[in-house]
Amino acid sequence: MRRSNFALRLQPSLLDELRKAAEAEGVALNQLINIAVAEKVSALRTENYFRERGRRADRAETLRILERAGKGNPPLRGDDLPAEWQKKPGRKAANGRDSVSRRGQKKKAAAKPQRLQS
Image (cartoon, rainbow, N blue to C red; front, side, top):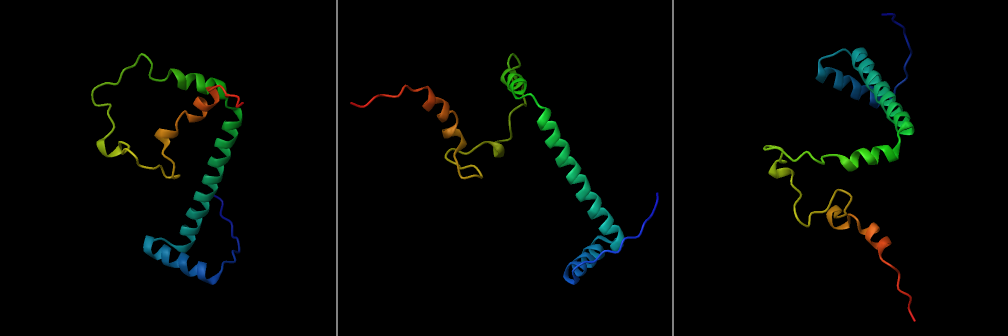
């Protein structure tokens, strides 16, 4: 592996935090910085990969596959979700919406014929 030197200017407060983190992890400051940079580069590459993969996706084909998922394949014994994973009635999702009661409302609203008022 080829080594190279790079002068890195850090804010003093950030350098202090890095030193504390390196000490807590039991690694050298240089190793901690190398790992942190490697993790960030990996995250950026992963994001780019999925963005590019999404551009190539065929939405219609994906929806066709999802539509038939599980058909003709009944659940087997033990396929249940753990009780603590079950959605509680009336419980809101993280976005503040009740996803169960709202599901399909747009389609239903679009399917209803509009009445003309006289």
